[in-house]
Image (cartoon, rainbow, N blue to C red; front, side, top):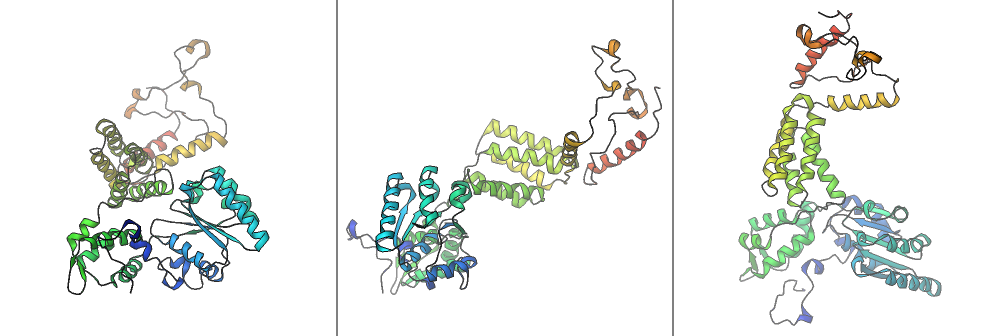
Length: 437
């Protein structure tokens, strides 16, 4: 049996083995682990790979989810001339040479060309445009591999000619299968070390195997096998990098989860998504702005203090910066999440804007117009009733021609008080104007 964990110090650099993750890459379709939604027997992708009829495609998903492993299996099973390249290391000139060779091969040998490009999101528009005709005409069978959402990085013309397959983080049972495959090489893993490693992997097979390989280098040799204890595994599992890109899908997904958690009154979820964004390097001012908006849009007058708390947090972020800014951000996010909710203010302004755009034209009534300059010449302000001169500081008079209600307070929190107050005043406003006191 091949020794996957031979770390002999006498090896010369030219004989250093490939990383464990590469050596344990599946060699047969039956060995491929995970992605049941795509690769279970009978699924379209599985059938296409088995028959060799896979169209040009994009595999996208998080690191360690099996994209590259599946691409290598496709290479093994194809009858075409296959090339596996990384987008970072090739330019327009090399792409042209590959396309020219593919055209000659197709004409002279009636043989296809499979081009697999890893990290395809690094290709600029010019590189993508060069690929487009060859993919469209079938000169190339193309597979792009990326950790980023292709809708953000690939142009629409190229995407329209590709089938997009989304890979998901591996499930716990998938990671356990991969780990068992590795441990078959006379390795013992303490139960606590095993649990720690699986948590650390977080759906990423490459991360799991890399950490296992590092831990093994310091593992204590035993009579039958090397044993990895919890301490060695903890040392091997250094700070986990957060899968997050401030310019792409992860950015929008995380801020969406954060906002929806505050709106849904789940403070624990809200502070988690906020912490993950901060840990990944998100601009704290961006997070503060979202809390500010949520405090008004989703809490509103159900708890008017929420807007003040959010505004204070925003100011605190500007004054103190990170890492201390995480504390007022957390305070504000938790307050907004726990506050009673109302979107009545949001609905009111949206309704009013729609009325301005498509409703009847309304002019400012004379008695509401500014009287500073033309009270005498144009009678502006004439007939205005000053509410503070009336009992309860309220008087019924026209404020909006052809009136219609836009604000409908809910019965949540303080807005219930506003609801009752507004109902009384709307009823009074419906009565005839009583005149000056």
